[in-house]
Length: 158
Image (cartoon, rainbow, N blue to C red; front, top):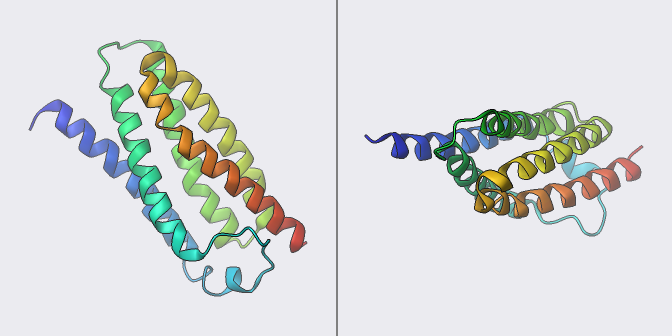
C-alpha cells in the first residue's frame, strides 16, 4: 500500500474514532438526562447530530490528510498538525464534560476552548494548503452553533 493511501486511511479513521469515543461518553445520557433537561427552541432533533458529525469528521480527515501529505516538512507543518490533534482531543472531551458529567457549564467552558483551537488550526492550515483550511469551515460553524446551544442549555438549567 502506498504511503499516500495509508495517510488518507489513517486521517479518516482517526477522526471517525474521535467521534466514536465521544459517542461512548454520550452513553445513555442522550435518552435519559439530555431528554429531560430544558432546551431552547432552536435545538435540532437528535437524529441530525449523527449524520452531521460523520460528515464533519470526514471533512476533518481530508483536511488532516492534505496538510500531512504536503511536501514541506517544517516546524509550521508540525505546529499545524499538533494543533489539529489537540482540537480533535478537545472535540472528544466535550462529550465527556457535557454528557458523561452531565454538566452544561463544563461543556460550555470546554467548547469555547475547542473553538479557539479549531480557529488556530484553520489559521495554520490555510498557508500550508488553503483547501485544508476551507474544509474546516463547516466544522467551526457547527461548533460555534453548538457553543450557542450549549450556552442556552446552561442558562435554562442552572
